[in-house]
Figure 1 (spheres, helix red, strand yellow):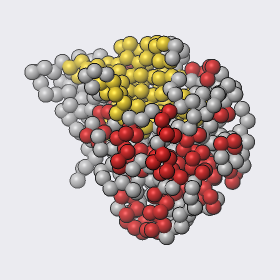
Figure 2 (cartoon, helix red, strand yellow):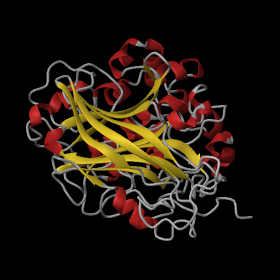
Figure 3 (cartoon, helix red, strand yellow):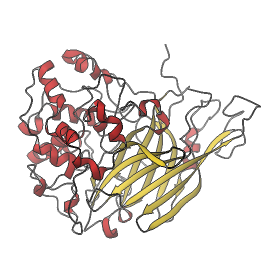
Figure 4 (tube, helix red, strand yellow):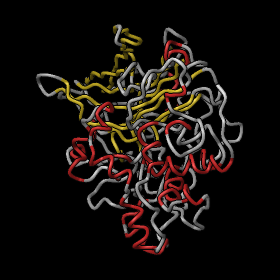
Length: 458
């Protein structure tokens, strides 16, 4: 598939897309923080079921495959024992794919977890000696998982007895955690891989945005608020043909990606958390709709006019004008409707470029607008990735999917200021956190190993 664009269009794509998927977190007045951490009243009290981030990118070392990552449980303090951070049981952790643009899920990868707890009344410890393997008898608490691939045609079990990489208790308990991570990676029947376990919190940003947008004068920047914390991760690497419409990524290269959590309420499973693009529920949805958004299927997005209105007239642009005097772009923002609900294609709206809308799939039918993280799998990995993604001229980055190193906050800050319309960046408008504190891996699952050092060492 040919990508037709130019450099000015690249700036427009990256900035406009970022506005659509965030409008930043400045309109929040409660405790919600980070990409989608504690973003809604109900989920803030249920961290095990809280989706925090979703990533989707063409695998940098295996370009015919796609890597999908979803995280749960925000702000895991590494020393937070004795129970540490297991995945929720009796729940479904999902990564969902829409490959034909009708906003309905075509493929679901579903992880379910179960506990093996041998502590009983004998000890309070997670382990009673050094743990050198996932089957080490010293590991007294472990989780196993089942992974299924579900389509309208049926369900197939890909992994039936996977072992979760445990929480990283500390150096004495787990002297070689990298070995435990390696042992937890499972090969799939189709040549793919999967992983479930604890990881570093890879979303980097300064959260003093809540103090009147970085102190009201951009003086409160440069501090990575999430540094040192961990999350729980499921990751999947599969051939692109496993995700593409009709199994043909050349004719149909674009997919939409979301992650959800389904909680068992005693009678049935109920969706309680949803994450596609970063920061959407946190900063686009008003407080009164946040719980409802977490339960909403993407196929219903376009019917909720109050949510659509938050895209066409983003509140944060007005806040930037009020606090910093940065004039808010004129409304309605039809370019944001294109990015937020349809993906980027010339036929969809004012952004004159073809990038990541399912309308570019040759076998797709009528497009149903919906909020998703969209990825064009035909765009090869960048040899020199730019942290600003498409904004920096790198078509392989956010908002064309999302890589671990994409600096979505800086992209979004500039977008809120209206750079998508002017083609000019606002000097100095940045949180000055440009990279994660830990380097990303060169092989699957790419996300760094979890920390075992306390965040507060004072």
